[in-house]
Length: 416
Image 1 (cartoon, helix red, strand yellow):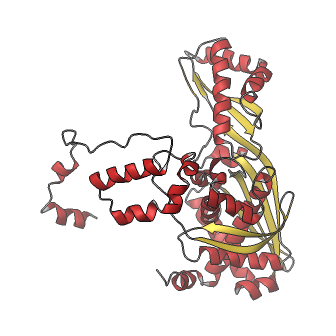
Image 2 (cartoon, helix red, strand yellow):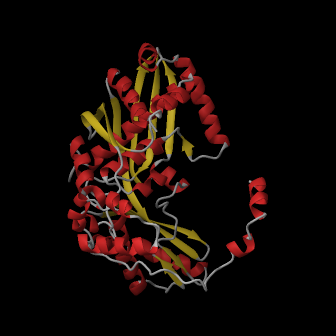
Image 3 (tube, one colour):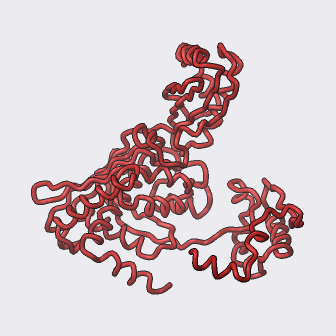
């Protein structure tokens, strides 16, 4: 890097290039448009072609006829709509699940640009199906919102906590009045000197619930400000304590979303037959990978939850940014008599079968493909997510342990 900078500095004035340039005229601002139509999209493209490097062929690719015909539908989920970006969607399966809510065989759509990903998850599904299927269970749920209140001193903070404890039922009623499906399960104060965070845990029905819990908590906070025993110096709807779209220790231990555990025992013979690797090599790699996770300070120990999560979240209209917190958890591989026990435990799976982007045309179809669209399906969807990630862990552990990882990626990425 230093060599490149030295070479460039011979003909580039970095001081001038990096200096603030408020005097340089800005191009016209993109003004917020909440409602979308084919006409508003075309107007934005006219501005982009005039004031940016956008070309007519760029407009044709993003603002295609079908996308513009559905502009109002897409516009419910986005501002300044200019079209859609197309991603390849692969399908893999069957994923056999023996779950509390997901029972049966599922074909799973995955949207990704990473070659080898779909094939890898498919390999994991094949071996687990031959072993009888993945056991998957949602064992907890609760989306967090953590408003923060700053007081003059810790005495006021203590009085505030005492009041919250005595008025918990009233606060619950106020919060739940904003939603038909959300329930305020617990309110847990966390005090740091003059500052109090309220850990508000909600169940959110079949929605992922991010907006739902924000609106409910806003009403709760408004009631606190009006009726509380002391007025805070400052208060904020979210104190950056909940782990919203971030990997956190709080989420790791308490969960933020739907907590799922999934497991299976794979006989040694099936591992050799389907994964082409010695079972002991998988266990040896598992020990090294766990050590690497610990030494590098990772939250949890796992190989690549984010791959499957991102692909499924994008395909089914979930909030893709929630991969940051969902991709936290623990993968285990342990010797059993003549087999290896594999499991994943994921405390923060933030998914819904209704709401958000799940109602968009392609995303709704992807959920429909799995039979997991609409009310009553979110718990099963979370169990599918856990089982999917378990299959991905098994496949990548086998590939690295057998020395096939690089070869598979080179082979399957050959068309790029």
